[in-house]
Each structure stands twice: as structure tokens, then as C-alpha cells.
Image 1 (cartoon, rainbow, N blue to C red):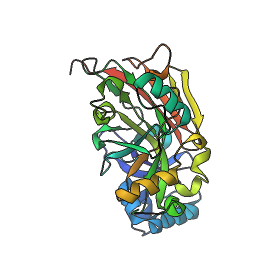
Image 2 (image 1 turned 60 degrees about the vertical axis):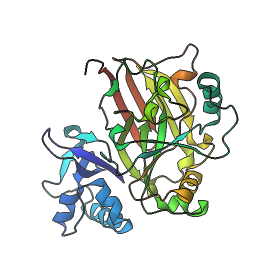
Image 3 (image 1 turned 180 degrees about the horizontal axis):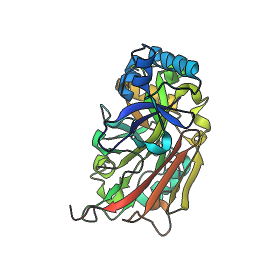
Image 4 (image 1 turned 120 degrees about the vertical axis):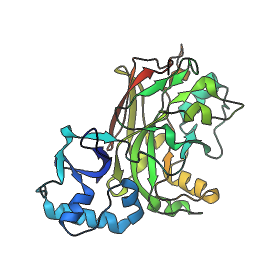
Amino acid sequence: MKLVTYRASVEAEGRLGVVSHDHVVDVARLGAAFDEPLPATMLGLIDMGRPGLEALAAILGECDGAFPPGTATHQANVRLLAPIPRPRKNIFGIGLNYLDHVAESAAALDTSADLPRQPVIFSKPPTAVIGPGDPIRHDKGVTKQLDWEVELAAIIGTTAARVPRAAALDHVFGYSVMIDISARDNRRAGQWIVSKGMDSFAPFGPCIVTADEIDDPQTLDLWLTVNGVEKQRSNTAKMLFKVDELIADISRVITLEPGDIIATGTPEGVGAGRTPQEWLWPGDTVVACVEGIGTIRHPVIDVSGD
């Protein structure tokens, strides 16, 4: 299933929807029509676990595209928000997780040229998250080196504490697209959270595709363009640490909980690694895509006068 958080009008609260037959179907209203209590938020559905997904799938199968009145809106008439508009915890970011990105970062950013022996983990606060179409904020008084990174995001569905790699993917609820926006000139004494955690630095969406629809998260093409020019193109097969390895590694020391998000790293092609270096500026448009999930598009705007 493709699950979204959507708004049907400017005033409306964000609600959980499922994409079906070119429509966004409101999950809670659909459940009510079938006397099945289903939640109105993405985190609510994640918390229900497998029974919630199975109940929703059964109702969708029964409808077969003929949805009860008041439950479905054509996709063109809704606005998509970030699938989880406000994560409960910081996003787990993974640095230096593609071979060629290790090399370009070592040349441009003074990171080590040696391949990491363990995942490099940083975080982005919940306030960094924005949804499809929302603007990436550029403050020239803070950064003149705003950079892009397309990433596969994995969303945790069930609590994972010290899980073995062989069982790690059983804890995944689904997958999404994230852009790890970075202010390269804001790394502080080797710490990355300011560089990567500013407001709007985690574009996220357009949906969460449930894990049962992604046979193998290590076979997905991903790409990013700036102003229509391709900057990154690769495949998740090139990750140094695969999704199951990341879950096993993090959960050995930090319990992963339902709704937690892991941004799994980016391939080569970032602005810092180019000759000459390239940066994002107000007026630019960034588009990112992961195969089988979807595409997000974001303008860069000037907030220097805020």
C-alpha cells in the first residue's frame, strides 16, 4: 500500500490516506463505513501493527475501487504533507554509506578516505521535516554552502532492541524518500547536527510504501536533479551498510521504536564533491526520486530577512 498524510482543504487537519485507483481514500472514514476502527494518523496506524494493515487491506479488497461516499478524493484535489509530519524522535541519519560518496567527501570535506568500519550515525530533529512541495529555507547569513543528498528512508514498525541482522527487516513498516539537506559550512568541531538539522532540512515523502511491496530495499534506483539537471543517480545495492545492517547496528545500542525513521545515506554527486563545487540558492528547485516509492519536489527560498 501507498500511505500518505493529506489535507483536502487549507483549513483541514492532516489525515491518513491510502492511494488507490487515482484517489486518496481516508483511512479512518473508510474504516467507519465498515465498522472497523482505523486511525486518522500515520503514527496511529504504525502503532496498530500488522492487524491494522491487514484490516485496511481487507476493506480495500472488498471495495475494489468502489469507495463509500465521503471517503475518497481524487489525488489532484488533495495536498500531500510529510507522511509523518512530526516524528516522535530525531531522524537517524547515516553518513558516508556509499563507496563513491566516501571518496568525494574525503576530497571535498576532509572526512576520512577509509571506508567506515561501522555505520556513521547523526541525527536530524523533528522540526527539520517538511512535506512535498514545501520550501527549503536558505539563509545566506547562516550558510553559503547548501547541499543536497537523495536518500531511501526506512520507517520502523515494531520495537527493535538488539535484533539480529537476519530479523531486522521484519521490523520495517515501510519506505519513503528523504532529501538530506546539509549546510556544509556549519559543521562544528566534527559535529553534524547543526549542518544537517536546521528547519526544512529533511524533505520527506510523498508517501510511505509498506514493506510488503518492496521485495528488496537493496535493488532500488534513486536520483536527484537541481533545476532539471541530474546530479545524482545510483542504486541502493551500492550501500556499504545495508538496511538490515543499519537496523541491527543501531538497535544494539539504541532501541528503535514504531515510527522511527532511518535515512540510509546518499550516493555520489553531491554539490560539495563537484569541480567546481555547486550549492543551492534561492530560486533553485530540487527533485528527488526513489524507484517504487515516488518523487518529491522542493523550491529553495530566501529567508535571510526573517
